[in-house]
Length: 120
Image 1 (cartoon, rainbow, N blue to C red):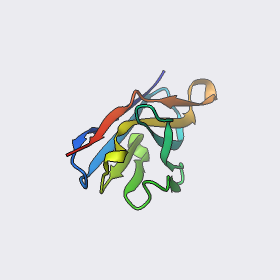
Image 2: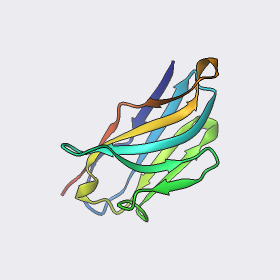
Image 3: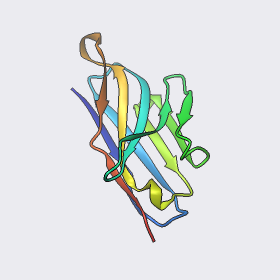
Image 4: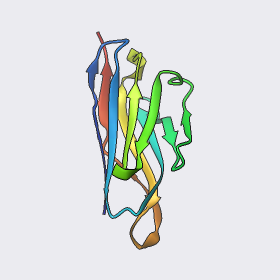
C-alpha cells in the first residue's frame, strides 16, 4: 500500500506565497517522477510542474518564474514553492507519484489534494 499526502494549502492574498508538500509513504521502493497538478472548479486538471528522479524540472507556462518544484529523496518528499500568487492560481493542488511499488510493479499514485485559495 502506497500513500500520498499533500499539505500546506490555505488562503493567501494576491502576491503572497505558499509552499506545498507531498509526502510518499508505504510500500514504495523507488520514486521516479513527481508531478503537481491543479484543478479549479469547472476546469480541466492542469499539469503545473514535474521533477524527475534526476532533478530535471518542467513547468507550465502559466507558473514559470513563480513556482519552484523540489524534492528530498531521502524523505520521499516533494515541495512546490509558490510565489507571486494570483487569483487564477486558486485550485485544488494534487500530487501524482510515479514509482516502483510492491512486487516491482511500476505504477502511479494520487494524493487527495490540498486547497489553495488566492483572494483579498
